[in-house]
Amino acid sequence: MAITSERWIDPGRLQAQIDDLAEFGARGETGVARLVYAPEWVAAQNQIAAWMTEAGLRVERDTVGNVWGYLDGRQSGEPLVVSGSHIDSQNPGGRFDGALGVLAAINALAALRERHGQPERTLAALSLVEEEASRFSTANFWGSRAIIGRIGAEEPKRLRGYDGVTMAEAMRDAGLDPNRIPEAKRDDIGVFIELHIEQGPYLEQADLPVGIVERVTGYRQYLVTLEGEANHAGTTPMDLRRDPMAGAAEIISGVVNTAHRMGRPAVTTIGRIHAQPNERAVIPRQVSFTVDARSPLPGQRERLLARHEALIREVADRRDLTLSLRVDSDRRPVLADPVLVEIIAEAASEAGVPAMRMTSGAVHDSMQLAEIARMAMIFVRSRGGISHSPEEFTSTEDAADGTEVLARALYRLGYA
Ligand code: HGY
Ligand code: MN
Ligand code: MN
Image 1 (cartoon, helix red, strand yellow):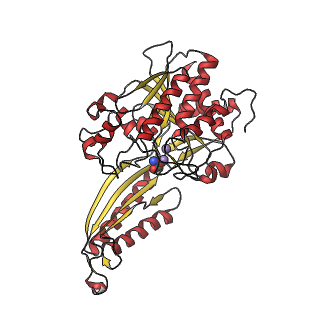
Image 2: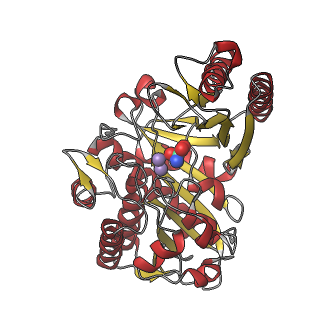
Image 3: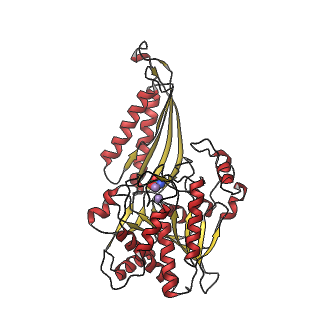
């Protein structure tokens, strides 16, 4: 715990809410599986709305299901200063990814209201509906995309979850009308600050509780589908095969090694693979897999992607496989607003919270909102650098340190 004379944030209240929220969609001792628009997600968003009301915030739900809690300012018509994150999780994930940012925003605004009363400019806590793509593989930040007006009219019917349900049906199940998504679009946000767990090892290695994000990584996610010819595993000579699994193996090993050889900060991951018919003694007819490639350095990202695409095409061609290369997500790296970075650094120093500037290797809602607002992020240390796992853990002290920094940054933005 950092040393400071007086704290605005009550660590006990924050921790109690982290624990209580983790009950919605709890899996095992510490896991959470809270998929967007599922019943446990609806219950969690209702709980968030209740905590916002308890904190003295004016609560509004938009047409996509984001929950907003406003601390209204004296000056109406000024752009909003917003902080928040998402409450959906990986399947299963941990208790902190996204959830901590929502709870930090609520606790920061509660503390500001209790200590300083009404702000000059309106501050808002935001609980976004979806970030993880854990139910709909291409939902791509459903909540924040709705806010920036980037959801295509056909998407609610086109997107189908792993459970076979369309996005439109899932929204209706949660009491929302997919035809009204365009109404969630906003043009009144001036600042968006997202507090998030680091999800990586750097803060722990530096023995620091808090990071100030200067840049969020760029990435591209593909679905690669290779199609060949199914045949008998014993009778078909190797040289006569059109084997998509052999092609997939070569590509997978190639792209992962390309990122490895390129070195930090390039990363490439194959997270999902599916073979058909998926039988022991059958050469598959089709193999599809995801490729997730990232770098926060624009030039390196382009080189990485170019090499991956060249390899994928070359292998498919040489092995006489039919290739479908679908791009599901594609974002260049995004810079945080330098003035906000300074404000957060000053807030950390005022709070006595040691912090370092860093890069986010994960992608975040903040990248979407950066299109319409000045954006910054505050990271808090993740134990062991582990995330997207029930093992994810952030201590009460670190969570409170990050929230303290957030509250003091919001004070500078809302009250000065
Ligand atoms: O994949 C990501 O970086 C994010 O956690 N969804
Ligand atoms: Mn997240
Ligand atoms: Mn995540």
